Length: 273
Image (cartoon, rainbow, N blue to C red; front, side, top):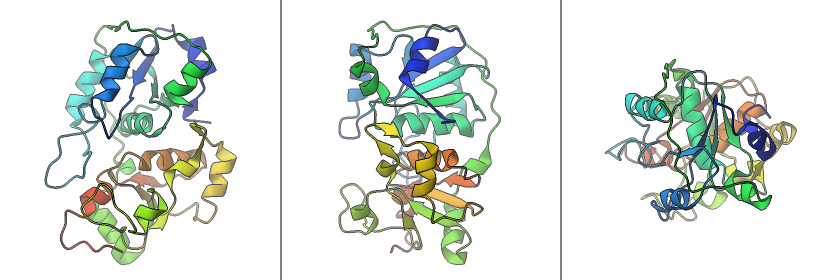
């Protein structure tokens, strides 16, 4: 796997000066839980990044439930965590894959390629009795240079164009019930963006681990490998495991609609299927 590292790799490289570990544990139902869990115990040398406070901007009229964070502010936080342009970074969550993938995508967007997701997350780390600590590390301020990869980000205007012209493949990453509009536990409207196909993100993982590249290719075998793809979900979090899986499967032209369905429905003129 190109973007995923296993716990054996991390254990072997945990003490290296050029490796930084980022704890991204989070609970949508209990937003403070991730930080509490981190303070209780975490992988040695890991720093904490909060989904809503660090990896998202405050919620506004548009932009969805987890808008793109301010780039300058995010860079300051990365530098304070000792993450430079030359640092190898590995992010983990509790095993869901989505919160760590959000961090992974953001660094990819900033132009940092040496970033990975820990396969199996913290749950997998604990299962083999790997070391944990409650010590909070501190690092010297680093120099992180941004080389923004705007080609990884789809705007709402681009999604509107895809709906009107059918010139891009829209992938809805939510579970089928939400895609079909049979139920909607979070957002104010139910359904999906017109023309989108459904590829539930959780089917790209098995037992908290990402399926290998060959199996990911099978998941997306009905999609044109040369087509331009835009992935979305409810708020730009669980779409990223699909983004990562598509890249692992060899798809080159993949974009993330960060605002996702929760942004789409804030525009009255936008249709819902």
